[in-house]
Image (cartoon, rainbow, N blue to C red; front, side):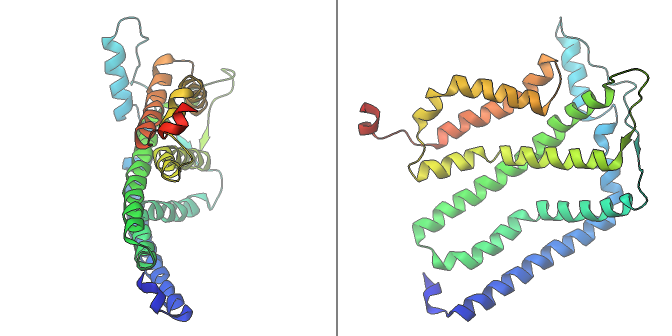
Length: 267
């Protein structure tokens, strides 16, 4: 705990230096993303709007190979976005560059904060924080990937083709598309932090592995409701695609938590 040798003002000066470095990382990355944003939009953000998106092709192959399932078609699907506000495209260009810079630089930002906090921690505390850092980052980006490649395309495909009446065509605004895109990716990133939260609660003695076995049936129902909410479609195939990763998170969380002490189990 070397930090005890520093005064309050010295700590403040070190923290200011760390915050300046964090701001520089975000700004530099945001500028680079701003310059590359047209390519990112066409090749990444708007890719689910096309019928040849990777998930759609996968669904088409799987449904064609399994008898009894309705065939998933990739032909003719295309989402045309419109802009209805004068400054929307410019502000979305800027905001998307900033948010993506925050997401992509998140491990670097946390590491910079770690360099400030680490001297004040004991050795065993540092090991615990390192584990949480690695697990948290891996799971967050895995959740974002599942949101991008699975959850958002399924949601987009369903909602873009849904009509309350044939007389009401869908005209999807750029703002609506980006709000849904960012929200689902962020939510899935947070959902995938469940193992980290379970591990932390287990380390504190608040949560034990027996909890997951006792409430597994309740969790299955709750997770099915969550999957149905995330993907509002009656197709059991797409519902299962969303449910399985979330349920596997539940089981993975159980593996990260220690069993209850023998005395507690006997009670």
